Structure formats: structure tokens, C-alpha cells
Image (cartoon, rainbow, N blue to C red):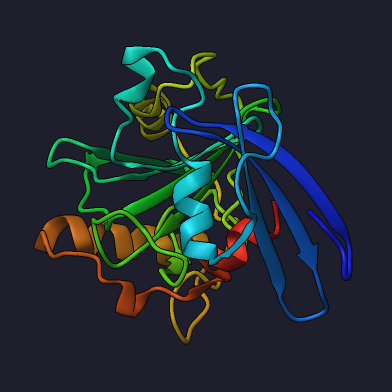
Length: 234
């Protein structure tokens, strides 16, 4: 994360071309300048300015020339030294495990499309809801995920859950869904109203019984309102 008027750079190695990125952060915006590099990591072409969307595409390219690594999962929108970000769509078999006092929910649940963000070193997780199943853009809006152990910034309380050591997005996602959630970390996850643990429990049961879809229209916007704002906090 950079503060106002900071300047920094990093070198990125993609399967197509190496480049150096100059980042100039100002009070209200950031400027990005790309310097293409040759095989000796020396400037090979005239530098040029790039947009945030173009930058996002560049930094999510595979980091090695290995054939398997080049087969990047289309769900992955961010993959660098520290973070792994991906979209995830649950299936009809994905369950909500929630324990409230003596009451337990262990039923299939119609989750909306979700955005996962993993800190690779700290093994921490953030989850957000989104409207569409497609690969997100910088302007993609983020909403509070309808899950009890996530705060309004999207940070997950993992409790006793230990995430898989491998950065396998399906294994991590499934490990999270298989864990039992025990407390409500964000009482304001719904748009325009606060809820208690009991009210969340009642809401989840109603969704399960009616088999209706959970719409982002009923979810409060996340404090990280868009993908762009989320990435700027990293």
C-alpha cells in the first residue's frame, strides 16, 4: 500500500514479456508507467502510460514460462507474490454450516457469485459478494457476503480453520465452506437494516425453505466498494 505522492517500481515477468512498472501515487489518483524490458532486464522500448484495467491484466499473467502455469484459471483475477484473488460460484450442493446457540444449519444454500482474496503468506482470507459470475473489472461493485463470520471490510474470521497450504482456489474455497460458522461479525450486512445472530439464523432458514436466490440488492455495499478500491488497500 502506498501513501500520497509515493513513487515506486517493481519488475514483473510474464509469459510474454518482462516489464518494469513505475507507480506514482497522488492524493486522489495513481499514475502507472510501463517500461518494457529485454532478456537482460534492460529497457527495450519507449515507456508508456497504462490504465488501471490494463495494469490488472498485466499483473495477473502467469509468473513462469512453465506450460502448466500458462494455463491460468479464468476465475483468477489477481496473482502476485502476496495475493491470490479469484471468483467463485457455488453449486447446488454447497452448504451453509452455521451454529447458533443450540441451533444448527447444515443445508444447501444459494450463495450469490463470490470474490475471494487470499494473503499467501499470512493465510488470511477476505470474501465479497458480487452481482455477476464473470471475471471482475476495476469497476465491479463489491457487497457484503451473506455469511456470518465476515466483517464489513470482507475479512474472514477463520476460527480454528487452517487453510490448505497449496494455493489451490477450489481447495481453499471448499475448505472454507466446509467449516462451521459460529458468530455474526457484521450486523449490517443487509441493506438498510441491522440484524442479530437470531435474525440472521431466521433469514438463512427462510432462504433455504423457499429456495429463492440471494440478490445483491438485499446486501449492503462492502467498505471495499469496488475491485479498484480493494486493490488500492493491498
